[in-house]
Image (cartoon, rainbow over all chains, first blue to last red; front, side, top):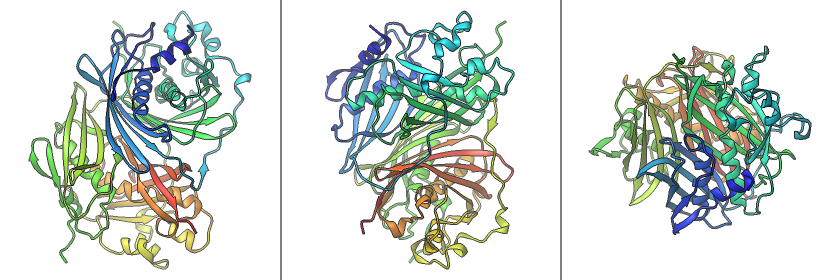
Length: 287
Length: 285
């Protein structure tokens, strides 16, 4: 089974009751559940209770407690509102009797309206760029194995990922831009494509928040966690085609950092906006 | 007609039970409740259930139904989590037995840490600028009438408001800037300042979507409403002193538009980030 096939299984929730779902864990997991997985599973749960002609247009979520990767996660859906044009859902993810995650999502019938969008940045295409595994191969002994393993999402950085940028004499900058796509074909169900991007969007936002300080995830000098996650889905797209994820951190302070992201399809359609705040504490030096 | 309630009175919720609050209406003769009022009152309710040493650092909310200005709003607080460093609350605003608004907010103990912020624009100080009422007076209409009364918030636009751009047949622009502050002094309680900023942040944010097309709420929309509201509070500040509100929109389509805002103090501290999506249905000719 490829990492993507496994992720698709993780997103294929078991429906225990009309509004109650159970999500399994991947075989190989970290010490705690990856936040993007919880967000994606919760969004699948919400979407399974909404008619297919209403795509999700936004979600707002809080991470409440670390998830335990050794047991499944239960998702309880609250049908907050079924309106004429909009449907609102709340999903609480539960483990060991406690809420670990709280998501609200809104769904909207398709409408027409006036349009504008920020333009796709002028960057090299993914074919001209190395994979993240190739870029980090020389560091494989120093960083967590997760960074260089095959992943469900392919990643090709425009420039250096923070793990490399911090080793460079150049200033690290405040921007992390990369091409991403699902590492294989994804079934046509639009919910899966949205949820795969929700999963992927959580991978690199907080490394963007610490990047201006010459720091990175995976080097042991930051202890952190996603605090919240907000996404706006502007138009349908396929997660198994390349998309560009441009992220920048406008602020950090008080042990927290904010990062925002914008996603375009390869043909220049702006399809997703993301904002996340994270806890970014400097790790205490090991004594 | 009785005098409308001031912002401080609107934010002074009546505590009915430990986790149940009642918010009164300002009585300013609106057809539906202003979204910023609901967001601010809900945040007061959440904050009243959290120890004062934990400051709110973010909120995420959905507007579910239009609010009825003729009756009070009841806010029920759910104490989702009381952790070592963070406290999370959910607040539901209720009228006539139905949820009109759903907010989550997170509070944190103060910590020290990494610091950076985006550079802020150079702008003229508020004292050198005309008031919003003066700028809108030549155009008239509902927007001018709104700013012509003494409301809870006063504003001094730095960039041209959409009404003015439209009236002179001008091109839209991407970034909108204005100074804002409350018209009355606020008590020292930091939560009140944050809630006043939540109130103010909802007043003009979606205009940033429309101004790109030189359109206005009153002239061009058949229907418009705030859909959600997200705010991140970075540091304490006073909302009864001038603050700079910069707004822009990165996307609109499908009868929706997304706008983001940054609130900063005159001494150059970024104190709040805001994102909001709105329903913006254009009037058919």
